[in-house]
Image (tube, rainbow, N blue to C red; front, side, top):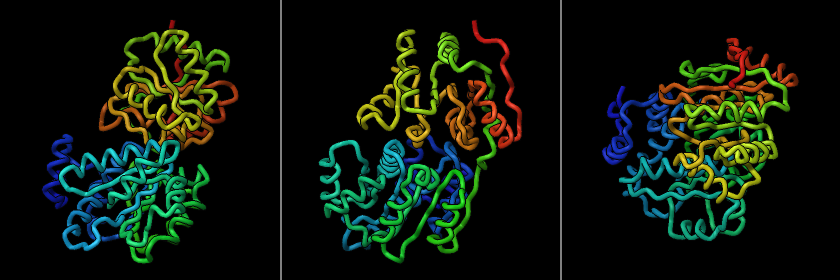
Length: 376
């Protein structure tokens, strides 16, 4: 199937062609017609499936179609609620790319930066609002935002909202929305709390599930090193001496651990930056931009900070610390091997993490090959 077959309007098709998009991903193929038909949607999709385009394209199309009929064109018509700053920025970039010929205005709200540019954009008028819960509630409390004309509400990364303790904020925001609206909920996993929420807020939704969380992309070459905890830093440096390992996302369990890894790599003259919740938004965006521009070879991240990071042509993901949730492993390694490209996922496993490895292998229904010899 090609995008033309999804009845996408000319201004958006023009933008998609400019981005080099020709064929929709499975979630786009299923979700776009359902959203255009006005249906609520429950999407279970992990990172790298094209989820963002699956809801931003039809939202832009519907708002473009309705724009000429609206008397109050400055009112916010769509709210996209996300858990992290990085994901908010990524969705904002997607709206800019796909909506460049639609004249649909949007802005992105998140904390950690001055609110002045955000409140100016709101005063100038926007139709699509992308926001994290904290900053949205703050600006609502200050009287900058009204949500009484919302027609579309998108709750993205609902499981991460749960992990980060945002569900209470989400429910508070939802009380300010009109009763009549189209709702879209996306989550990589479906824990009981999220399933219950979906059952309560969605009306006869179309259910779309692609790339189940238990699966890992076939094009990713996975392997594991058994290594003592104290030897992980030395192993990482040895691996990075190989110049073919050119673009690396390293995952640590803690923010302190991420900073530690960066310090050790910098001492070894390997360019690296960390991205985690204690970094300012400016520092996080700077690190991400440097990594995408290949000015920084290694980006070290915690799981929460990494949600929403979209990096093309990432050659390697290295699990410096194995995650204690097996689903998190799938999300992590899904950062590489995107769009049919190959990728490599390496994991370091110390004695305390062997139980985590066992859980991961059970979830993905395959044994991860062990590399016996460490690099010289």
